Structure formats: C-alpha cells, structure tokens
Length: 357
Image 1 (cartoon, rainbow, N blue to C red):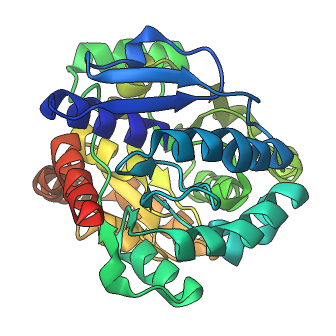
Image 2 (cartoon, rainbow, N blue to C red):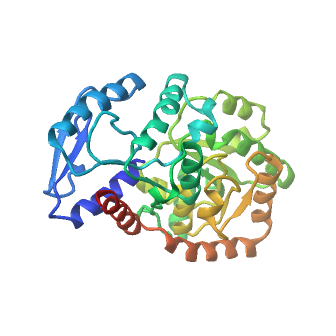
C-alpha cells in the first residue's frame, strides 16, 4: 500500500499542476512526500495505529476536515473511508484477505475490518483495486456492481534491475555465505505461507543434497510461532537465513542475485514481488490461487500453496532444468511490460475522473 500510494500520487500530483491536492497525515511527515507545489499537507490527530484510533481519526478528524473543506473528492489509497463525510470518496481496496482468513489478523483489527470495510464499499462513489481477482472478490462479497470497480495494477519499483555477475557474487557473499539461494520477499505474515515454504525447502534439500540456501527477506510480523517451530524441526535450519527488512538497494541486489523467487502465499491481492522478480530476470515459483496466476501469467511455475510436495517439486524442477529457468526468465521479460507505475498512475487518475463525473 505504501509503494502504491507513493508511486501513483507522485506521478498524479506532478502531472496535474492545475489541481490542488491536500494530503492528510496523522503524524509528522517527511518533506519527500510533498511531490510538487500544488500539495498542501495537514496533520490531523490522533495518530491512527489502532482500531479505536482508526475510528477516531476517520469519523472525527477527517470527517470534520472534509465537511469543512468540501473537496471534490477524498481519495483513500489504503481503503479506509469517512462514513460521516459528505463528499465523493474513492477508496483503493487492495484485497479483503481479512474476510477469508480472519485468523491472520489480530482479533480487534479483524473485527474492525470486517465491520467497516463492507460499509466503506457501500459508501464509496467508486472503488479502485489492484487485480481482476480482487475486483470480483469485492463485488461478490460486498454486493457491489462490478462496473463501479476499476482495476489499477501495481507497478515495478525502478530499483529492481539485472546486475552483473560480479555484483551477484558479492551479494551472495554478504547475505548467503556465498551460496545460491531461493528467495522469499515480503512481510513475515501468516498468509505468506512461510511455514510450508520452509517444509518444502527441507524436503528439497533432503532429496537433492544441494548447497542452496533459503533467504527470507522482510520485516517480522506477528503469528510466527509456527514458523520458528517448523525451523526447529527441519534438518536444514542452518541453510535458512532471515535478513529482516532490507534497504531498497540491498533488496534489489538480493532479488537480482537469487536462484529463483519462491513466493507462495495462500492469499494475495496482487503480489508485487512477482513483477519485481520479472524485472530482475530471475525465475518464479508462485501460488495457483487468488490473484497470483493473473499477475504471473505464463512466466512462473504455479503450485498449490497448501501442498508442500508441489512447492518442493517446483524447486527441484528449477534446480535440475536450466532450460526451464531460461524459459521462465524470457517469458518474464515480456510479461513485465504489462506493469509500470506510469500505467498505474494513469489508471488511478482515470478512476478519479470517473468518480468526479
């Protein structure tokens, strides 16, 4: 959501100098987010990082600000709306995983999301989302006319790119003890299915006796007790490396140096690491559920994320078949052209224009 907001709003504000944008923040902000001189920042309290504070921020602070200012449109890039505001509103609802997998969300947050997001969807003048899958999911579950929902695909961070072999060697020396590695990128959240990925990697290691590592790159979330227990039960725990959150430059180098991306969540509204892997020209293993086949197209091996053996078999195929790796990389180089932040910004602006009609 952060990348979507940053990349689309940067382009939209700079391309529409005749439009006045007011950015609402809940805390001090970096000047980097004031992309052009047609933006006015406002800080509204309280800081909203808890369901009770979400409600206070949107239904008191934001509501009073919008009703006073009477803007043409309130755009919410993370899907929250102000139910008491009288202006037109356009939320970007990235996905509704919390409806399908409520156990993945902390109890109070789960209750807030599942109570309010159906109301946000009904309140919205239009809705934007990031895949055809999410469009259908929102339409079906919240009884929204699909013609009211616009698909705005995510783009690719320009930091991701192909790097030379010497840079790959240095990256591997720094992060994976000099060894090749499968890579997972993302927050360490239950829906990312890291437990089964580790189990699959353990089976792959036992069968192939390869020296590949598994690199897990991303910030820790909650609900990881099962992951740590799974690692303790594996025979290859020394080959699993958690990097934590990486800088943009380090993450781009780690992606470009990977043997393959292994990204097998059981629910995803889009799946940005897939297109970043295409840009980095590495092969991809991903899930055959939700939005992931839509985004990957023919440029990935798709597997049932609930079947450890399928994930393991895909790893083994890539390990044993260099021609398959080359084929997937070539298809990814073509597929990635469907995704760019310029296209995303254009699509979001078109959704804004539809909302304003």
